[in-house]
Length: 84
Image (cartoon, rainbow, N blue to C red):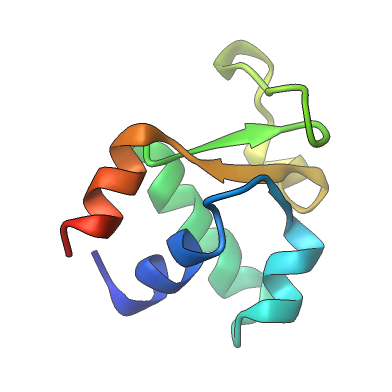
């Protein structure tokens, strides 16, 4: 897990909107998008439409809607984060 991934995971113990992540982390939109995409591919995070409604894989449009999503670490992601 890279330092950037670790920092993002630190923010995702609770559901957080993309805007919050941009404010808290010293990353550009494209850098954050890349890190989130990598975490998503590993199954370490999941996406939500809002604080409660998960975006399931068949409806996920990460490339076009990543800035509109909310994010949360998965159990597997938390274990990876805590094991670092």
